[in-house]
Image 1 (spheres, helix red, strand yellow):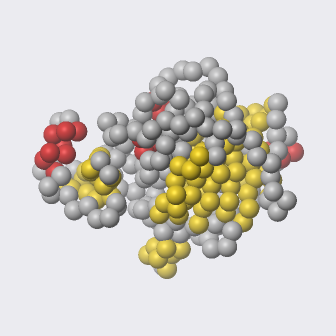
Image 2: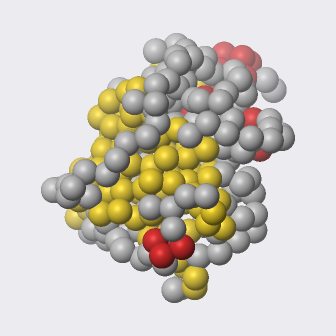
Length: 268
Protein backbone atom coordinates (compact mmCIF):
# COMPACT_ATOMS: atom_id res chain seq x y z
CA UNK A 1 0.00 0.00 0.00
CA UNK A 2 1.53 3.33 -0.99
CA UNK A 3 1.78 6.48 1.17
CA UNK A 4 -1.17 8.26 -0.43
CA UNK A 5 -3.49 5.38 0.31
CA UNK A 6 -2.14 5.06 3.85
CA UNK A 7 -2.74 8.71 4.58
CA UNK A 8 -6.18 8.56 3.01
CA UNK A 9 -7.14 5.61 5.21
CA UNK A 10 -5.70 6.87 8.48
CA UNK A 11 -5.60 10.66 8.42
CA UNK A 12 -9.17 10.90 9.72
CA UNK A 13 -8.37 8.47 12.53
CA UNK A 14 -5.04 9.79 13.77
CA UNK A 15 -5.19 12.14 16.73
CA UNK A 16 -2.34 14.54 16.11
CA UNK A 17 -1.75 17.19 18.74
CA UNK A 18 0.29 20.37 18.31
CA UNK A 19 3.02 19.09 15.99
CA UNK A 20 3.72 15.97 18.06
CA UNK A 21 3.99 12.48 16.66
CA UNK A 22 0.91 10.27 16.87
CA UNK A 23 0.23 6.64 16.12
CA UNK A 24 -2.53 4.54 14.62
CA UNK A 25 -2.86 0.77 14.71
CA UNK A 26 -3.69 -0.95 11.43
CA UNK A 27 -5.97 -3.95 11.09
CA UNK A 28 -2.82 -6.09 11.01
CA UNK A 29 -1.75 -4.72 14.41
CA UNK A 30 1.11 -2.57 13.11
CA UNK A 31 1.69 0.84 14.64
CA UNK A 32 2.10 3.65 12.12
CA UNK A 33 3.86 6.83 13.27
CA UNK A 34 2.79 10.18 11.86
CA UNK A 35 4.14 13.69 12.34
CA UNK A 36 1.95 16.76 11.88
CA UNK A 37 3.51 19.41 9.61
CA UNK A 38 2.36 22.51 7.73
CA UNK A 39 1.75 20.27 4.72
CA UNK A 40 -0.25 17.72 6.69
CA UNK A 41 0.51 14.44 8.46
CA UNK A 42 3.43 12.39 7.16
CA UNK A 43 4.85 9.00 8.01
CA UNK A 44 8.27 9.20 9.65
CA UNK A 45 11.15 8.88 7.13
CA UNK A 46 8.75 9.39 4.18
CA UNK A 47 10.83 10.28 1.11
CA UNK A 48 7.77 11.93 -0.47
CA UNK A 49 7.50 14.50 2.34
CA UNK A 50 8.20 18.02 0.99
CA UNK A 51 11.89 18.86 1.35
CA UNK A 52 13.08 22.24 2.69
CA UNK A 53 14.21 24.89 0.19
CA UNK A 54 17.88 25.08 -0.78
CA UNK A 55 19.98 28.12 0.19
CA UNK A 56 23.61 28.95 -0.59
CA UNK A 57 25.66 28.79 2.65
CA UNK A 58 28.53 31.05 3.71
CA UNK A 59 31.98 30.28 5.13
CA UNK A 60 32.33 27.39 7.57
CA UNK A 61 35.34 28.17 9.76
CA UNK A 62 35.03 29.77 13.19
CA UNK A 63 37.80 30.08 15.80
CA UNK A 64 37.07 28.87 19.30
CA UNK A 65 36.14 31.57 21.85
CA UNK A 66 38.45 32.07 24.82
CA UNK A 67 36.19 30.22 27.29
CA UNK A 68 35.63 27.19 25.06
CA UNK A 69 36.97 23.69 25.66
CA UNK A 70 38.78 22.56 22.52
CA UNK A 71 37.83 18.94 21.81
CA UNK A 72 39.79 18.51 18.59
CA UNK A 73 42.30 20.86 16.99
CA UNK A 74 43.54 18.61 14.19
CA UNK A 75 46.38 16.87 16.02
CA UNK A 76 46.98 13.35 17.33
CA UNK A 77 47.33 14.86 20.83
CA UNK A 78 43.73 16.01 20.79
CA UNK A 79 42.51 12.67 19.46
CA UNK A 80 43.55 11.34 22.87
CA UNK A 81 40.51 13.20 24.26
CA UNK A 82 38.33 10.74 22.37
CA UNK A 83 37.62 7.05 22.87
CA UNK A 84 36.04 4.22 20.91
CA UNK A 85 34.24 3.23 24.10
CA UNK A 86 35.25 1.33 27.22
CA UNK A 87 38.44 3.43 27.29
CA UNK A 88 39.67 1.85 24.04
CA UNK A 89 41.74 4.22 21.84
CA UNK A 90 39.90 5.97 19.05
CA UNK A 91 40.77 4.35 15.73
CA UNK A 92 39.88 7.18 13.39
CA UNK A 93 42.65 8.53 11.14
CA UNK A 94 44.21 11.94 11.85
CA UNK A 95 45.90 13.79 8.99
CA UNK A 96 46.11 17.26 7.46
CA UNK A 97 44.37 18.84 10.44
CA UNK A 98 41.27 16.62 10.52
CA UNK A 99 40.12 13.24 11.74
CA UNK A 100 38.33 10.84 9.43
CA UNK A 101 35.89 8.06 10.15
CA UNK A 102 37.25 4.57 9.46
CA UNK A 103 34.66 2.10 8.20
CA UNK A 104 33.92 -0.55 10.79
CA UNK A 105 35.82 1.18 13.59
CA UNK A 106 32.68 2.40 15.32
CA UNK A 107 31.91 5.85 16.70
CA UNK A 108 34.28 8.07 18.67
CA UNK A 109 33.19 9.69 21.93
CA UNK A 110 34.70 12.39 24.10
CA UNK A 111 36.13 11.14 27.37
CA UNK A 112 34.77 14.27 29.03
CA UNK A 113 31.00 14.43 29.47
CA UNK A 114 28.68 17.37 28.98
CA UNK A 115 25.08 18.42 29.50
CA UNK A 116 23.60 21.63 28.11
CA UNK A 117 26.12 23.25 25.81
CA UNK A 118 27.09 25.30 22.78
CA UNK A 119 28.90 23.02 20.34
CA UNK A 120 30.83 23.94 17.20
CA UNK A 121 31.75 21.19 14.73
CA UNK A 122 33.20 21.37 11.22
CA UNK A 123 32.82 18.46 8.81
CA UNK A 124 33.27 17.49 5.18
CA UNK A 125 31.58 14.67 3.29
CA UNK A 126 33.72 12.60 0.88
CA UNK A 127 35.02 14.18 -2.33
CA UNK A 128 34.38 10.91 -4.15
CA UNK A 129 30.60 10.65 -4.35
CA UNK A 130 29.27 7.12 -4.12
CA UNK A 131 25.84 5.83 -3.22
CA UNK A 132 22.67 7.84 -2.80
CA UNK A 133 20.17 8.77 -0.13
CA UNK A 134 21.33 7.62 3.30
CA UNK A 135 24.32 5.84 1.74
CA UNK A 136 26.08 9.07 0.79
CA UNK A 137 28.38 10.84 3.26
CA UNK A 138 26.47 9.54 6.28
CA UNK A 139 27.57 10.31 9.84
CA UNK A 140 26.12 12.16 12.81
CA UNK A 141 26.85 14.42 15.78
CA UNK A 142 25.29 13.13 19.01
CA UNK A 143 24.70 15.25 22.10
CA UNK A 144 25.08 13.30 25.36
CA UNK A 145 25.79 10.35 23.04
CA UNK A 146 22.03 10.11 22.44
CA UNK A 147 20.46 12.92 20.40
CA UNK A 148 21.60 13.15 16.77
CA UNK A 149 22.08 16.04 14.41
CA UNK A 150 22.42 14.19 11.12
CA UNK A 151 25.49 14.56 8.92
CA UNK A 152 24.85 13.60 5.29
CA UNK A 153 25.82 14.67 1.80
CA UNK A 154 22.52 16.41 0.99
CA UNK A 155 23.89 18.37 -1.96
CA UNK A 156 21.54 17.38 -4.79
CA UNK A 157 20.88 14.10 -3.00
CA UNK A 158 17.27 13.10 -2.30
CA UNK A 159 16.40 11.26 0.90
CA UNK A 160 13.66 11.45 3.51
CA UNK A 161 13.72 15.06 4.81
CA UNK A 162 13.79 14.09 8.50
CA UNK A 163 17.06 12.26 7.77
CA UNK A 164 18.81 14.79 5.53
CA UNK A 165 21.81 16.86 6.55
CA UNK A 166 21.11 18.95 9.71
CA UNK A 167 17.91 17.07 10.55
CA UNK A 168 17.26 16.18 14.17
CA UNK A 169 17.18 12.62 13.00
CA UNK A 170 13.67 11.27 12.62
CA UNK A 171 12.23 14.20 14.59
CA UNK A 172 12.66 17.58 12.91
CA UNK A 173 13.32 18.65 9.32
CA UNK A 174 15.71 21.61 8.92
CA UNK A 175 14.09 24.90 7.90
CA UNK A 176 16.27 25.01 4.78
CA UNK A 177 18.89 22.86 3.06
CA UNK A 178 22.14 24.78 3.61
CA UNK A 179 24.36 21.85 2.66
CA UNK A 180 27.68 22.54 0.95
CA UNK A 181 29.16 20.49 -1.86
CA UNK A 182 31.04 17.24 -1.28
CA UNK A 183 34.60 17.85 0.03
CA UNK A 184 33.71 21.38 1.18
CA UNK A 185 34.15 22.20 4.86
CA UNK A 186 30.86 22.88 6.59
CA UNK A 187 29.90 23.85 10.13
CA UNK A 188 27.32 23.18 12.79
CA UNK A 189 26.76 25.56 15.68
CA UNK A 190 24.42 23.85 18.11
CA UNK A 191 22.76 25.29 21.20
CA UNK A 192 21.51 22.34 23.22
CA UNK A 193 19.60 22.24 26.49
CA UNK A 194 19.32 18.77 27.93
CA UNK A 195 16.08 17.13 29.01
CA UNK A 196 15.28 16.91 32.71
CA UNK A 197 13.73 13.82 34.27
CA UNK A 198 11.91 13.09 37.49
CA UNK A 199 12.18 9.35 37.87
CA UNK A 200 11.05 7.88 34.55
CA UNK A 201 9.10 10.98 33.50
CA UNK A 202 10.53 13.75 31.33
CA UNK A 203 9.55 17.08 32.91
CA UNK A 204 11.50 19.27 30.48
CA UNK A 205 12.17 18.17 26.93
CA UNK A 206 15.48 18.76 25.16
CA UNK A 207 15.73 21.80 22.89
CA UNK A 208 17.95 22.46 19.88
CA UNK A 209 18.89 25.63 18.06
CA UNK A 210 21.15 24.80 15.12
CA UNK A 211 22.99 26.88 12.53
CA UNK A 212 24.30 25.02 9.50
CA UNK A 213 27.01 26.96 7.68
CA UNK A 214 25.81 30.06 9.53
CA UNK A 215 22.19 29.57 8.45
CA UNK A 216 19.49 28.97 11.09
CA UNK A 217 17.97 25.54 10.45
CA UNK A 218 16.37 24.78 13.86
CA UNK A 219 14.95 27.60 15.98
CA UNK A 220 14.65 26.42 19.60
CA UNK A 221 13.04 23.15 18.55
CA UNK A 222 11.66 21.05 21.39
CA UNK A 223 12.61 17.43 20.85
CA UNK A 224 9.62 15.12 21.23
CA UNK A 225 11.64 11.99 21.99
CA UNK A 226 14.68 9.99 20.98
CA UNK A 227 16.39 10.25 17.60
CA UNK A 228 17.15 6.58 16.98
CA UNK A 229 16.22 5.03 13.62
CA UNK A 230 12.47 4.54 13.91
CA UNK A 231 11.16 2.97 10.76
CA UNK A 232 7.47 3.51 9.94
CA UNK A 233 6.12 1.40 12.81
CA UNK A 234 8.24 2.24 15.87
CA UNK A 235 8.03 5.25 18.18
CA UNK A 236 11.24 6.20 19.97
CA UNK A 237 10.32 7.76 23.31
CA UNK A 238 12.51 9.52 25.85
CA UNK A 239 14.47 7.15 28.05
CA UNK A 240 15.70 8.58 31.36
CA UNK A 241 19.44 9.23 31.52
CA UNK A 242 22.00 11.22 33.46
CA UNK A 243 22.73 14.94 33.44
CA UNK A 244 25.84 14.50 31.28
CA UNK A 245 27.07 12.36 28.40
CA UNK A 246 29.75 12.37 25.70
CA UNK A 247 29.81 14.16 22.38
CA UNK A 248 29.78 11.32 19.86
CA UNK A 249 30.62 11.21 16.15
CA UNK A 250 29.15 8.35 14.16
CA UNK A 251 30.89 5.85 11.90
CA UNK A 252 28.25 4.98 9.31
CA UNK A 253 30.67 3.43 6.82
CA UNK A 254 31.57 6.65 4.97
CA UNK A 255 34.92 8.50 5.32
CA UNK A 256 33.44 11.72 6.72
CA UNK A 257 36.02 14.17 8.11
CA UNK A 258 35.85 16.44 11.19
CA UNK A 259 37.95 19.33 12.45
CA UNK A 260 37.86 22.39 14.75
CA UNK A 261 35.53 20.99 17.41
CA UNK A 262 34.93 23.06 20.53
CA UNK A 263 32.30 23.32 23.24
CA UNK A 264 31.06 25.77 25.86
CA UNK A 265 29.13 24.57 28.90
CA UNK A 266 25.73 26.19 29.46
CA UNK A 267 23.54 26.36 32.51
CA UNK A 268 20.60 23.99 32.51
